Image 1 (cartoon, helix red, strand yellow):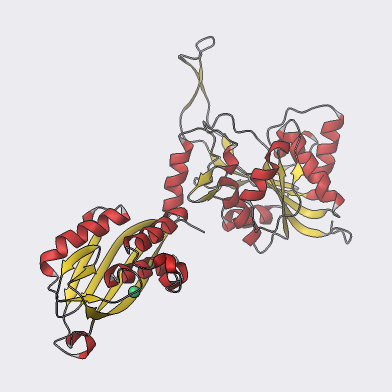
Image 2 (image 1 turned 120 degrees about the vertical axis):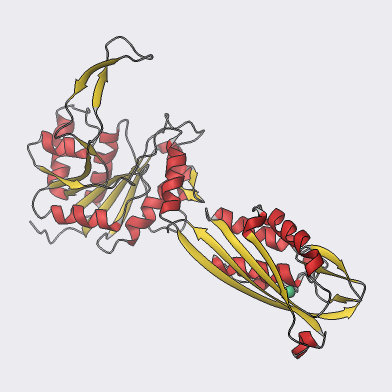
Length: 399
Ligand code: MG
């Protein structure tokens, strides 16, 4: 039933109009941060990136216009649709808005509170639409089920068992042929029936078939306060390890101490630089920035800026740490090598390790400080300056 007048082949409608009253937070949960970005943004980005999805539209609550704009900054989503009193009404208003844009052949309807959809799941759903006008991801129920005994809430007593065979747990996104779903929503509205909690119910009520497609255990709905911890765990399980490298050199000048890895070390010379010239912390800061692909230390702290004259370099390292945290990442390990003949690093190594661990908020077991000479060769061998190399290993959430 291809239709030449539709403007989209496949469009996604994300429902973000709920108030999230069960989630235990002070604003609608879809705008609360998970791993450094708002909950709703995880699924929006993944849907926008899917090659088969031509457009993504979002239904929001009238009170959330500002929160929505902030949460979706930079995403190509068009003007949000203001939702209705029930989920069913919100979806219908979203479908009508898409129809007003020229309609579509297929529509995916997704709940903003499910951040962990995968492209594979979307592919399975769209493939199922070749056979039926609707398809939903679902998982077989494997736990034993029971109903609580009547009149025993909120201190429930176990009542009768419920047969679990042929029972499924239904997820989103759900996929539909657009025209039958829009017609089903209009017909159900005309009946005054607002009882449906998902769109497969609306479609089936009008006599259509809906296919059950294998869902994904990670595709959880963040509903209760404890779901945030589970969501964080899933995010980490979908994470990736990144490695960054840093290198720095500072030349010697007249003085009586050097700063190395956050420790003031007495010496017959000092290191010249705009800041405190802590070559070890500079290399380490660059390694962390490299691991998260956030440029280099010179971009964040330009030597031309008088603000950083004489600055303690732990501030640079702390800034890099905060950038990792803002992305929802964790620093797994750092390793610094100082290259110099003198001063001798060995006696200061425990203090350097402890100081870096303190700045990065890591246990000392995740921090390594090493030193080597260059056998009196090169500029470090001639004691013209000190060089440092560093490697940082960072775990970032799935994109
Ligand atoms: Mg430097």
